[in-house]
Amino acid sequence: MTKVNLRPFVRPNLDVLFVALNPASQSNSNGHYFSGKKSRFFLLLYKSGLITRDVDKSIADGIVFGSNKINYKEAQFGIADLVDDIVETKSTRIRTRYHHVERLVSIIRELKPRIVCIIHSKVRDAINNSRHPDIVARLDYGNCGKILRGCDSIFFLNYFPNGNTILDEPKLWMFKELREAI
Image 1 (cartoon, helix red, strand yellow):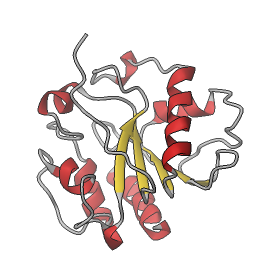
Image 2: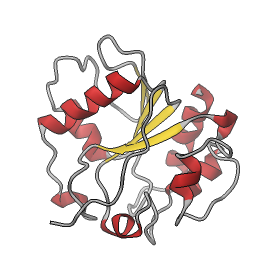
Image 3: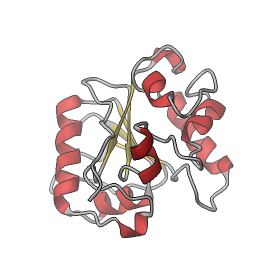
Image 4: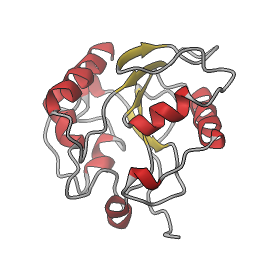
């Protein structure tokens, strides 16, 4: 098993906590989120206006998640993975479990981000199918509202930004909708 080199950028009271599925092999090797050759995450953040300038993806996580200087309205952004202990690029090889959802719910309750943005369909499916007693609504693309009982965090669901056949337009539209909620 490959050692996980990525550490989440999380702290209390974030404006947006992005939730990905797991560390991808190339990003894990690089030591930076979304730094793989096919990664378009930071480019989409820029094109949507969530960040104010295009940044080199090899170091963008430290700039976007580690500070707020180029973030829209100087918002505080963070990133975490649902399955934080498995390094794998092919999402079909990742198996989500109830304890992954339970850990994510605990993180959200503890840190109280204003917005949680899910950016992978397998994270959506894990949450929707978990039967967690505090999840009171299902995730669907766009603004999903409050889905956690007793939690004020607003949930958004967007398509995975990298390596799929979905065009940029719907991804950008949802990131722009998220920007308007900040």
